Length: 284
Image 1 (tube, rainbow, N blue to C red):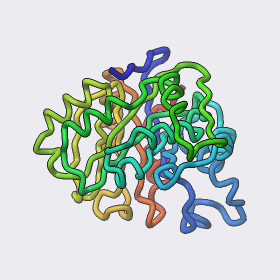
Image 2 (tube, rainbow, N blue to C red; image 1 turned 30 degrees about the vertical axis):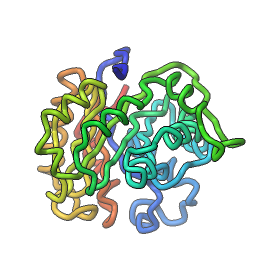
Image 3 (cartoon, helix red, strand yellow; image 1 turned 180 degrees about the vertical axis):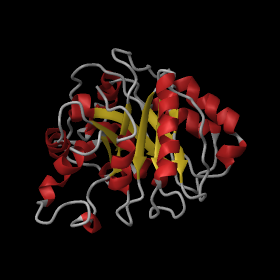
């Protein structure tokens, strides 16, 4: 069973954006003349977390993880998106080496700034209890477990692996699903997640994909892709108030809450995130 987070402080809410490298954001969110290298520090100064999504598309270099860690203030949190090679290409089959490679790529170098690891399944992936149980059971529950897993990386990572343990903190995982069969088997799916302490992502997708809001872990995770138009439409004051209340509900029962805006197409995400941050207590 995955370890729960040791409660050394009151529960907190973390709010941010999914990624920060978007050319269309320049001169709209990022001020004119801002160097591309300064976009992450600029965004991090206005958010309380960022979902790092480059890791979804390819394995990143240890130097990149170290640079991202150094670019944000102490106390900042990155959620990290797991590789699509595992979820979309391998489709949770033969994932042992790719999972080891992912954790050997430098993820652990984020140190205390490593937040939940997000796994997004494709819309064509139906509920399969055996496949899902095996994958979830293989996810490392702590930094030490992740380092032991990373040590089993294959030759692809030879000479470029980095997986220092640091403190043996728990590692959280969250899964976002998009196939309607998960709604039809919601109780079984929720039980499977809860048995391992993995969060079920609440995905707001303008009605395109299932929206499953079930508590299965000691934290909650929401991805806001657009209320009326996927990846494009923003959230008005009333909608933001509802999401603020959703977060407060989890805080009141001792759970941390993470909310990430992925409605980036019309540069709504950073402004919606900042507006929601103003409605809720800041971490620490």
